[in-house]
Image (cartoon, rainbow, N blue to C red; front, side):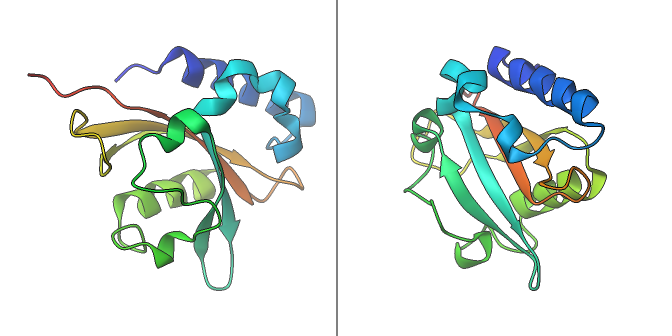
Length: 146
C-alpha cells in the first residue's frame, strides 16, 4: 500500500530532523506549525518501561473518528485485544526496537464498517535522540472493495 500525502510529509520531516539532530528526532521536533493540517491525522504514543506498555498521549481529531472511543491516557494493556500479542503491540515494538520508521498493516477494528485494514506509519521519537520514548502513528484507512 502506498503512503498517503500526510504519511509522506511526516516521514520527510522525521528524516530531516534525524539528519539535523544526528539521532532520533524528539517530540519537540514536531511542532504544531511544522505539522500544519496533518496534526489531525496523528496519534502520539508514550513508550512505557517496567512493565512494558504503550499509552495514548495525543489523538488527532481525524484519527479519533476511526476509534471506538477516546483512548487518550489509556494504555494498550488495559484495552481488550490491544495488549501483548496483538498486531498493534507487535508493530509498535518493531518500530521501537528498530529505531526506524515502519509502514505496517493492522486489521481495522473500529466503528466504521467500510474499512478492513489500516496501513500505519510508525515514527520513533527519543528525548535523548537515542532511546525511543514516544512514537508518532499516521494511519491510512483504505476502504474495502465492494
